[in-house]
Structure formats: structure tokens, C-alpha cells
Image (cartoon, rainbow, N blue to C red; front, side, top):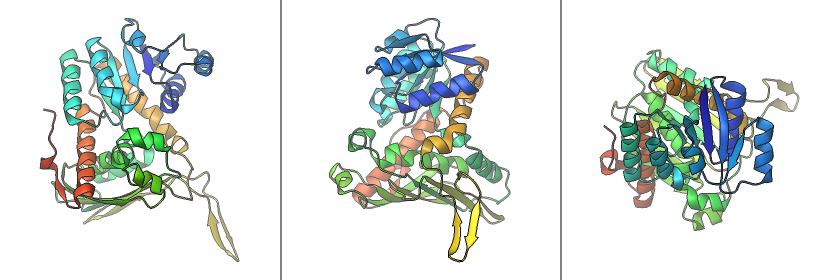
Amino acid sequence: MLNIGIIGAGRIGRVHCECVARHVPQAKVMALADPLADNSLRAFAANMGIPAVYEDYMRIVGDPDIGAVLICSPTDTHTRIIVEAARAGKHIFCEKPVDIDVARIERAAEAVAKAGVTFQVGFNRRFDNNFKALREAVASGRIGRPHIIRITSRDPAPPPLSYIAASGGLFMDMAIHDFDMARFICGSEPAEVYAAGAALIDPAIGAAGDVDTAVTTIKFESGAMAVIDNSRKAAYGYDQRAEAFGPEGAVSVSNNTKSTAVFSGADGVVAEKPLYFFLERYMQSYADEIRAFADAAVNGTPPAVTMGDGLAAVRMALAAARSLAQNRPVAMSEIAGGIR
């Protein structure tokens, strides 16, 4: 049994807690830590059968009976906690992005390697049944060598401005999933990134120094190209689609809906809208990624998503931000960093 402590008990921390309880029989959550721990969190913990709730996450890091931590705290705390947890011999799952600074990620990678612990990044979309099937179709050669990858990723509503101000921006907190997915599907490393964006939904987002609408083009070392479009607001729900095209064919995945019912009548044809929120769309993938992490930690097998994968996506996000700021393609060689 892998005893887990969750650091950061906001929305995603609670999602992971429920996933462990319901879908990961080889693990158990023993403690939650959050500086804003209140009676509501303690009631949640009691309902989930979790023995301890702390304000200080070091109570988890220092507990010899806890073998692994899930880091679900704000991004600017990630690498510090990674280093502390690694030194304490804990296996580590960290939500994306690992950090927004390459040098800090490299230092965290050194601490993890020195400690010899399992480390996995929270790119849950790799575990989604639809995207897994897309990746497997490409990897098996069914479409030949991929030429074009198209990804659409649009949220139903923008996050609060307070989140945007601290998140690193659209490329780092939202599109980073799509950068990882493009690399994952393509099976090649990015060579060049070119991004365009604007604040078309809310001028306050622009005033905060971010964009809410973006199109990013990626050239890969294999010669393949990817086009990613992002929006902070889609009136019809959570829009998550992708396609890979090659000389032997194409494979695409569409949105999940509440049902597949379609009404056809004199006034037109009406189908269900996409599921509205990411928690509805990706709950299966959240459960599967934590199960994979627990398996790797218990069995000593390689994690499904590595520190190198996390750094690669961050470097792509930094390249996109530089491209937008300077209105030019940015070669990945311009973005320092790498994990050997």
C-alpha cells in the first residue's frame, strides 16, 4: 500500500483525493495540507476517511509513514516542494507546469535524480481514452509518418483575473497541455514555434498582460507541423478535439457529450453540446494518471510522464510567449535548458 499526502487541497487536489479513494486500490491518502485549511476542508477529509489535515505541508514531507506526495499547490511553490520531498525520499507527482522557470526545473530534476525517487508530471490528457487512441494510431503507423497535427482547445469561460495574474499566462497554464499533446502525438521534438494571440474576449485580460485567444504553429524535427487554437471562452462548452494527418490517412477525436442523441426535425438537426467543464471531460484520465503513478512508485517502473516531458512543454510555452511578444518564429534552440 502506498501512503499518499496531498499538498494543496484546492479543486484539483480534491479531485486527485477522490480518484485515489475510488480508483486506486494500491494507494491511500493519509493527509492533506493547505495553508487555508478550514472546517470545510476538515469535513471533506473526514468524509473521505483521511486521518490528518495540516496547514504546514512540511508535516507531510516529514512523515516517515507517507511514501508519496501529490503536489497540487500554486505553480510558484512546485519546485521548492519537489526538492524538499525528494530529499525526504518521497515519490512525487506534480501538477503542470512543473515551474515557469527552466533553471528551477533543472534544479528540481537534479534533486529527484539524486534521491532516486519516482517523479511524474500531471499531463492527464495523455491518459484520456480518446487521445490515447489517437496517439496509438499514429505510433502504429496507420497514417504513415505524421504530416499535420491539429488541436482545438477552448474553455467554456475564462478563469478569474487573479488566477491569470499568477498562472504564467495562457501559453503556460492552458496551452501547455496542448503543447505536450502535440509532442506526444507527433513523437518528435519541436524545432520552431510561432504564436499569434489577442485579448478578444475580455480587455481586462489584455490589461493584465495576457491573451485569451491564440493560434500556435509548431514545426517538429521530423518535418511534421502542428496547429493549435486556444480560446478562453466557447459558448457551447468545453471544446477538445484533435486530428493527425499523414500520407496513409487521418485519425481524429471529437468532443465527449452527455449523450449521442441527435434530434432531426423540420427546423434542423440538434445534438448535445460538449461536456461543459474539464472535470466532467477528464475524470477518467485523472484516475488513470494517478493509478499509473502509484504503479510506478510501488513497482519501481519508469513513470508515464517524466520531468523531461514537463520541461519540454514549459520550453514550448516560453517559446510561444517570446514569439507573441516579438512577432516572429522562435527556434527551440533559443530557449535554454534540457535534462540529460
